[in-house]
Image 1 (cartoon, rainbow over the protein chains, first blue to last red):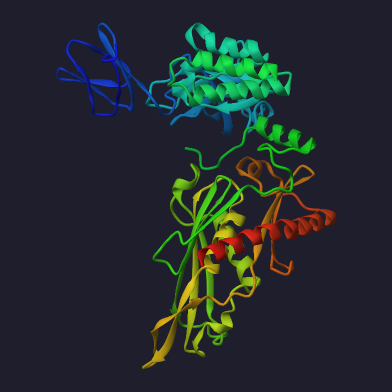
Image 2: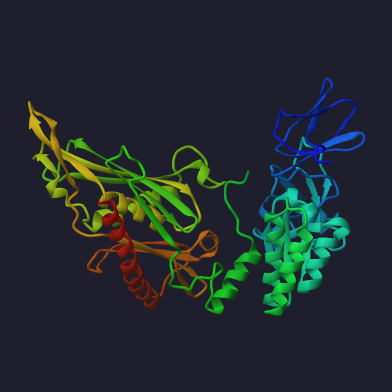
Length: 226
Length: 272
């Protein structure tokens, strides 16, 4: 097991042999080479590298949190913590009968607003197309935004959502996690809010530690007593 | 990516909500500046230098002292020029190229605060009247940006000037030549301290951080000298200040400035 996981940097040969290259590795001849700084994982027939850091790369159907940075007469531009800009067409919000004359985009979403959105389409050649016309999507009206590394989002969710459920249960907060590493937390009580924020930041900082769930649980419990 | 940074509305609302309770987003009181750390002599080869940390804002200042031709209308005075610029590394929105208006303002406000306080006694910086004078050039570079660059740049330039050593020159064959072993401190009259205050809603906050800077409606930078006299003032932002608010700001700038002046003096003494 110790041999199967190791820290790699770009150019390192992770392994050689008949493996299928997955995320952040390339196949060069018979060697599988890492393209990122991270931890390599070798499975029975495949190899991947879990990156330690990096920007968000959009994937179709991902839930993301976006921030409106600008708009034209036809669409909004969203900052989605990526090298790409999220593209939200006005038709998505106003419906098919959207008209550039009658409808003013800033009446629905203005610069600085946060939205929960989904990546509708993306093919790396153009900016990702974003939609907010679905249940639970749209403008976010309350809560605070916490920024974590996109690579640590799976850790924050935990196995089958165990980590995030634990945080939500302990603090009574509602947490919306964007795959792009932006997390919105809202809570009735300021105490719960700050505790949830602390827990999320703790996950972000200590994502590489093995028994993280216990650590977070201890932190959440400990605060309750005081 | 985007060339302007946009603060999210939720954070803006949160900042204002906290201010209503007399609190700030980073836990400071309204009239409390961030932690200031001054390291002098950051650039060993310069005549004087300082690296200043104001919270997460970090700036470096280097001072170069060399003979120069005086301005035609003031042949009996030396030169003092202070500049400021941003490194592209300091913030995602900063680009290379000619300085943008806010950066020009930063350089001018930093320069003005020190110049108008008459910190440097330029009349002592004359080698030969109308022919050759000593020029003092303080160049400030912003390395990391988290709001309130005005004050950080001003403190860095002041600290660098306070610890600067100038060579002496004498005229030989109509050109200035350095006198060996003639190094001495720059002639300093006073210690100017700039204090920047932001107005968010109806609240005045001292030393706004990055998030506060982006949500403030107006700002004012007031520079005071060692006697507590106001010697420079710059107002920015689209909102205005009432008369009472300006008075409140001036009093704050004297009060907060006095504490920071002590820190600058301490940095000067440690350097000796």
